[in-house]
Amino acid sequence: MAPDSTRDFYDDLAPDYHLIFQDWDASMAYQATVLDDLVRARLGAGPRRILDCSCGIGTQAIGLALSGHEVVGSDLSPRAAARATAEAAARGATLPTAAADMRHLPFVSSVFDVVVCADNALPHLLSAQDVTAALRGMRRVLREDGLLLLTVRSYDGTRPTSTPPQVSQTPDGRVITFQLWHWHEDGERYDLEHIQLIPAADTWTVRARRTTYWALNRDQLTEFAAEAGFTDLSWHTPESTGFYQPVLTARVGI
Image (cartoon, rainbow, N blue to C red; front, side, top):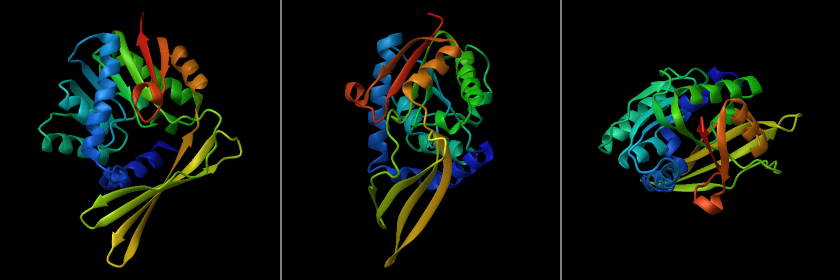
């Protein structure tokens, strides 16, 4: 899928993205705690200068900023990035953001202690060339001995065609979110339909958005990260961290 299509997907989803969580603020706080623990375990006590290069509406970035880190966000979607800044301010945090493609990060080299790329953002890139370009860009903006935190879906050995419904409560009623996956013939890439049912009087409003992913497994991502110059690569399972996706940690120059 072209970058414009991915950007359109997230621009359209930005106003409703929080509805996939039962309690968005609680999820922000919990995810920040897990990620902060991983940072502390590898870099020691902070605070740290962190780039969230797929910040979306701020789920990880806001929580990390509220934890005391100096956080900058970037995202392919201008609407999502702008909402992240506004949501951070509403909670008393500062979160400068930029609309940027992760393959072309608009930051000087060696300026961040940590780069976060969460929520399965990297697999929107559909070729080895693009994945490597993004990882090399993340490495470039990290200081020597800096830390990458990358979270993705667990694709190892699974090819689901849908996800269970998620239900969130709003003042107007319950919102139901689920996904349908349509696999390509190569068995590696799939078109995702993201569907939300929004209560409207005695009926539902259906909002359907579409995007494409590459189902990269852990071995592939480990190889790509090593090719991009990362070392000390380790995978952390949801069972060991409490995070909802597997997390890859990697370092620069050690």
